[in-house]
Image 1 (cartoon, rainbow, N blue to C red):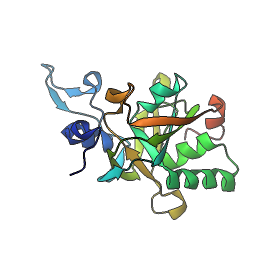
Image 2 (cartoon, one colour):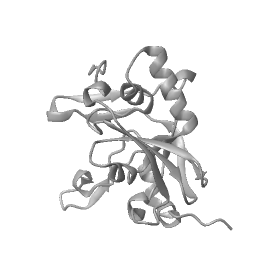
Image 3 (cartoon, helix red, strand yellow):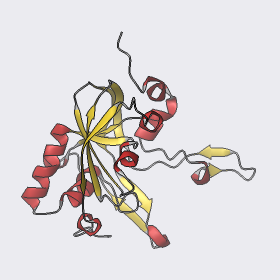
Image 4 (spheres, rainbow, N blue to C red):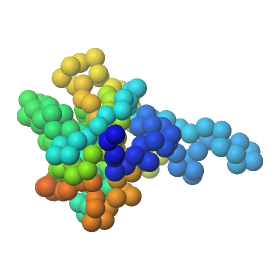
Length: 199
């Protein structure tokens, strides 16, 4: 039977909740008058994610904010090599920066990430992940100026992009990390915003 570096984190029921876009942070929970949690807000994430296995040698990509490649690699949201090529093709065909293409296809508003760093990593130890299509996003704008709405467009094949949520990577950041960082690209923060419109 295969063993996975993040087996415990994947089996935790919260991992799928995060994969479907559930915000589990206590400070943003919906509570009653006594402070008891009634519900958690849900936005973004994936539609009906399925279990997926990342094998040793697989290449995956992640966009993040410039705070060091190792910190970016601890995050859970990734795309695989085939989906990354689709992202590149979309950027080229629409003559837009790669960061903006990621925002459009992965449904990532500026409120969630600067998207000014791109990390390419190689899987060193088998990992379990959730894989699925992005879901629509409804989230507050910075500064309380309104609401960001990014509807998914999965019915358009050129905009249908599977994402990966790999739980537990932050717990394995030492010498035996299940990912090896192969390349880090610093992208212009403004490049991922050029053409991004708040409607």
